[in-house]
Picture 1 (tube, rainbow, N blue to C red):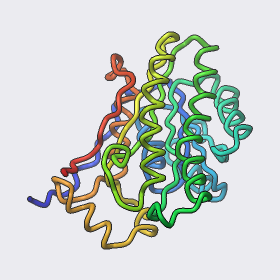
Picture 2 (cartoon, one colour):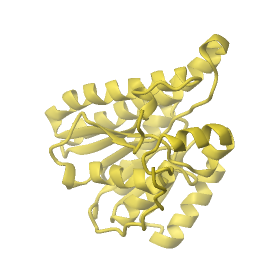
Picture 3 (tube, helix red, strand yellow):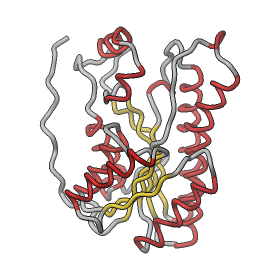
Length: 263
């Protein structure tokens, strides 16, 4: 196994010029924040959302300084609250006049073995990670069906939906559910010209993950990667951009693994 340095950042190519996107859990330095930036770099107008208003405003300000206040707006939203979810998508249409792309990135994890897991721990992860994706997907598809102009949804799943990892029973079940939900939604939404796909990252390291994961586990997960390194969040965002763009016009119901992980 050979260590490979992270590749050079890929510049935007205007793939999404004129499109409007909503990205959930987009505050900060994780996959959601990286995705918002990549969408902006590709020319999209982006409405970012998060359940942490202060962090959301700070991230909006940083992006607005770089891309302009007309290109990036923000609305706080807790995806466990359907009223807030519906308000988020209504805001996208009233603010930008249309909705083209939805990235359902909100999720919640944790590490606890099943024998020690409480009902509350199980329910909390499922309600954010799976039910939250469902609520946002439902709201988006209702708007797309009414508009008749088509659209794209990209859900954030995880390799834990495929591969067992101790202590991740609730998160794995939720992410496997996101995969199944993606496939079902794709079949239903094809009738009105909407594509629904998902990404399945393995290890995309960012400051929040580093805080809630032990160095020993991060080292173990990194050792499983063929490149002997973690993914950069923007590398996952690049695949989301691909799925949101015309380059994937015949893809729907797919879950793309963004991983170099081996058994």
